Length: 105
Image (tube, rainbow, N blue to C red; front, side):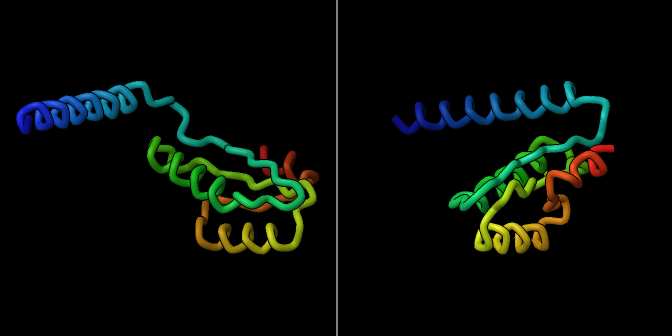
């Protein structure tokens, strides 16, 4: 039984290694990207969304990617949480819809 578990873990490790190698080989030529997360009203999971976007860009080797947290009329509590997250993660920016065209240039 222990041998089967060890073989399954070894197989999982080989698949994860192959996945990382494929992602490295097929990495896009551009070194930057933009994620736009529109938030309006009260958003209970804004912290989860922002942290997920930050980790996703880190895991997929896009260090120059920027996440724009688009304020589509978020409430005060959500805005405070968003501002704190922007301080913690330098690649996340809080912006208004009218600022979006300027930031995407």
